[in-house]
Length: 166
Image (cartoon, rainbow, N blue to C red; front, side, top):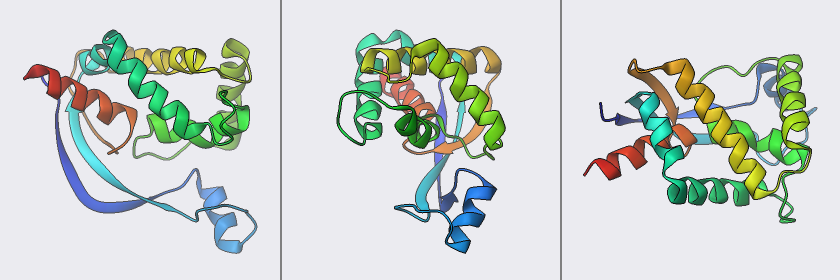
C-alpha cells in the first residue's frame, strides 16, 4: 500500500504541554515564540512507509542531517540535552497531547543513558532510526490514519515513499 496524504488547511497552535501553555499565558515562562503555526496533514501509511525511509540510507542521512542542523541551536556540532528536549518533539511530532513532565523526563533519561548527553550527527541518526523502527513495530502492517505536522518525520517518510513509487 502506498501512503497517501491530504493537507488540512487549518493551522494549529502547537505547545509542549498544558502546563507550559498556562505559564506562557501568565507570563511566567520565557520563550522566543508563544506559539507556532503549522500546517497539519492527514495521512495514511503503514510500517513499510517508515522502514522504507530508514532503509534508503542516503535519503535518511540527508533528512536527519537537516533536522540536526535545525536543532543544533548553538552550532557546536552536537545536540545538548537542552537542544534535544526543545526540538525532538518537532521532529517526530503528531497531533497529540504531550505526556507530563515526569513521563517525558524518564524518556529523555533513557535516551541520554543509551546515546550520551551530547549527540553527534551519527548518534542523532541512530536515535531517530530507533524511534522510527519502534513506531513501525507498533503500527504493524495495518494502515494507519494520522494527522501529522507537514514538516515532521512521518510526513517526510510518506513523501519519500510517494516519490519513489513513481
